[in-house]
Amino acid sequence: MPEVLKAPLVVEFPFTRSLGPVQSAFLTGLRERVVLGVRTTDGRTLVPPVEYDPVTAEDIRDLVEVAPTGTVTTWAWNHAPRRGQPLTTPFAWVLVRLDGADTALLHALDAPGPDAVHTGMRVRIRWAAERTGAITDIACFEPYDGNEAQSAGHTGEFEDPVTGIVAAARLDYTYSPGRAQTAYINALSGRRTVGERCPSCRKVYVPPRGACPTCGVATAEQVEVGPRGTVTTFCIVNIKAKNLDIEVPYVYAHIALDGADLALHGRIGGIPYDEVRMGLRVEPVWTDGSRYPDHYRPTGEPDADYDTYKELL
Image (tube, rainbow, N blue to C red; front, side):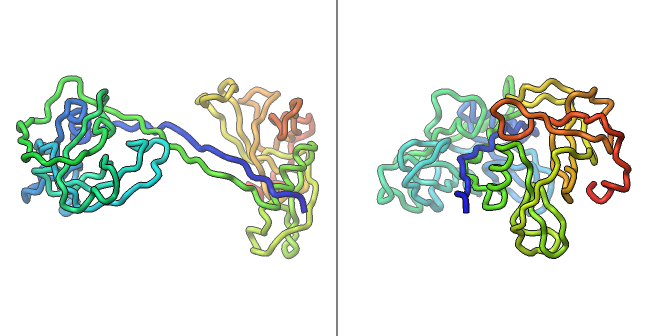
């Protein structure tokens, strides 16, 4: 059996969101070294603030400043900080109830070791040197043995408030396609497309999954399909993707390769985007050194009859 492939994979994208009045005030306050909570109708002060009471679901907008000092309510030691975490040296994750608040805020505590951390210890905020209106404006918490800090009673009104944030989402992992898809990928390197046939329903699945998604039984019999196929359905892409050197608009389609019982997806080229249609007969176009087709182009054959691919939509 050939060696199963594996490779590091990173999924990363920036998540952009707008802020409502409460979150805007909270993050703008951090930029100005002010911590704001929100007061509920029954007198509780929630930090971090939310726009709706978690108990009554009432809309809440009464902002109130709390102190930058507080008490650790619980904690866990982080022996090996990871990329993107608040500190690069071992630290404690802590829930801190700031003075004047009724709920706890999660952040990092800079401490020399786990023996220096305990529930009930007093801490204060260490502000970041450069602040932009994000939770990272709190660099971390640090031990504090002074008196309770007094808040100035800020109203939550600021000049140039923060109205949106961009949070980078990233997932690093090692991907292994498994036995069936390893064979599929290896065949693509030879400009061949192979699927696997279910021993029960006899359907051929491309890409193969190692088991039939309909019958649930294992598959092993390899079947070469294509290279030509039929466009079953498609979409027109009008937004240019970052780091993708393809001009918009372009067409991405589901393509049922001849002999396959499952459509795969690919880009359609060699034809104006507004002339792509269901039933269009296409063939793969390879570039030098590529491990998969760059795109599919029309073959010039008559369009496939709808009844021949309707079950693959």
